[in-house]
Length: 101
Image (cartoon, rainbow, N blue to C red; front, side):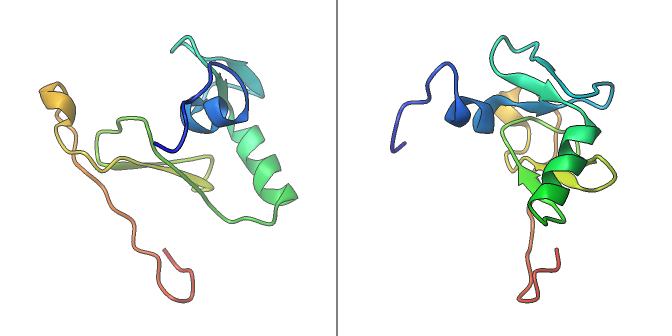
């Protein structure tokens, strides 16, 4: 790692913030660090920055990938059977030259 992740701030939130389908806005994260955010936050962020899709990781998902907020965000997790404790698949994302995923 090029740097240590602080307990608060932008770098911490980029790593630890999680989507929550029941949330509206931002809430404290059950992990004890950073926040959870709702689909409204994703839609607002994507519109403000002219994005179609946010790709994130660092959260185990059963099929290796999981869409959120009407396919405006995808969680990608590439480690199958994570730590021998989960029965998850590993996912990958191919982005073509025309930026089509």
